[in-house]
Each structure stands twice: as C-alpha cells, then as structure tokens.
Amino acid sequence: MTKKEITLVVFTVILAGVYLCCFTDWLKEKHINIEHTVRPNVVVPGRRGNPVNPSPYVISFSLGREYKLTSVMVVPAAEFHANPQVHPLWHLVGDAKSAPTRFVVYGMPIAGMKPLVTGTEAEPLTPGVEYRLLVAAGRTRGEHAFKIAGTAGSRQ
Image (cartoon, rainbow, N blue to C red; front, side, top):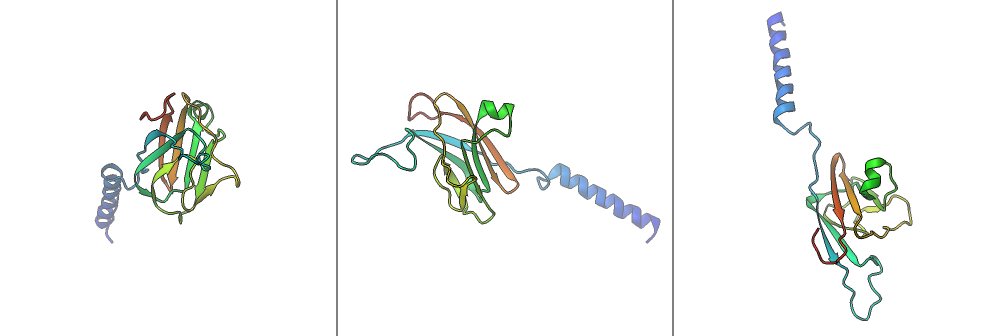
C-alpha cells in the first residue's frame, strides 16, 4: 500500500467513527420509559385480603414495551440521592433468561426473577413519601420517581 492509500483508509475509518458517534444511537445507553398508576387494592368479599399484597394500594408500572428484566428495585428517593447504596424496599434479580414483561406490579413476583435476598418480600410503602423505581434489562436502564397520595384511586 502506498502512503496515499493508507491515508485514505485512516480517513475513512475516522469518518465512520464520527458518523457512529454523532448520528446513530449504537454507542448510546438505551433508556426504559416508565409510567405508573396507583389504585386501591380491591378485597373480594368473603376473603381476608390479598395475601401477596396486603397494602391498601396496588402500584403498577408500565415499561412501554417488553423487556427481559435483570433487576427491579424500589428505594426511598431522598435516601437514594444521599446514598446510592441505600437498602432497597423491594429488590428482584434475574438473568438474561427472564421472561419478557411489559408491566411490573410492586410486590408481585415477575416470571424468571427472584428476590436478591432469599425469603424477603416487598416492604410496605408509606403515603406521601417519594420513591424511585430502578429497572435494568441488561445494559438498558430506567428510573422513575413516584409517590402514593393520601387517597387511593388517584393517578399520580
């Protein structure tokens, strides 16, 4: 190869690198868009309540599309800002083989995932306190702040 050919190859590689960095999202971290809904936990007459979710509220999260989640965690937002290693109120982990899911309900099991600490369950949430949901699906991540109002059935 001549010096001119080497220069053209190097220039082409640099131009391709600039194109990939500036005009594609190939190298950028992907983000999960999350929305939430808070509803009252309906108790069926004749039953003692929902044994899986004894909370008076059902908090559901929509992820926008299906993801094979590898981590789901809920932490108090104020403590999380001060210390990212805060004790989670709910923490599930899975692997790349977890079932694709589009919705997550606080405290409910997710197919292919298990609590980080065996035998633990989701802790009850306090109305008026802001929380943060952190989800991961491989390298794709998402965060969502939410709060339970004092009355059930309202959309936050």
